[in-house]
Image 1 (tube, helix red, strand yellow):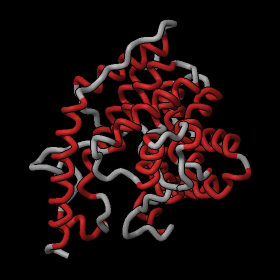
Image 2 (cartoon, helix red, strand yellow):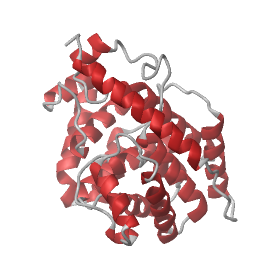
Image 3 (cartoon, helix red, strand yellow):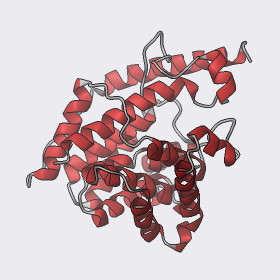
Image 4 (cartoon, helix red, strand yellow):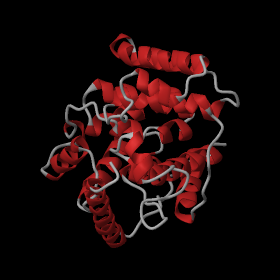
Length: 306
């Protein structure tokens, strides 16, 4: 049964997203001075807000509910959601994703909307595929379709594949086997993805040597923070996952529980179910507030302490 894995994936994305959002783009040393430890929500008066990371995961889940195992239908549903999502003024959206959404509004077909970028957009929404889909061949097709809708650089796709297989490995096996997971990634990305697989191999070796994720990041020249380049982001994220694959914090919210339960039901049933929807006016108002808070954080970062 996929329900527990799916709900955990969505909740984990949301909780991690809300916890880390105020720290995005700040060097670790200054983040500690400015914000303190990321042990609670610090984005808006002790509360957290989700960003495009969680929103894309939810849009993927909604599209999977409607499309089931039809990859072309999934792409059309996800493209439609992405197109309307862009109109809600999402703060912090990546350039490639924003350009893809604009291209869709200008009449581009989903298979021509992507732009050449190796950003981590596809990877940030990839875990839900591994949590929801049993057939790894179908999972790969879905991940590739999702990636190419916004990012056409193969590196973005390879990063997303690594994340999806990580979720797949964690769901299928009680004890995570890093080498078994890596072998699947190697087979999926082939020689073209060798640069990424070597980085992932280094991450596995670093975990085995007892290095912290911060030490691993520093060894890759990322001591001042991890960039949005997928070959920086994914290996560090994988290192953190392998360091504590079963240690995660769960926070239950009604809307995410509903989406996860419906997606799980759509996977196990033969009939297509209706995806849970959200109020577009509420989303617009939420994004206006989100933008205001983001700008406030931006001005705060200009001030002391440095």
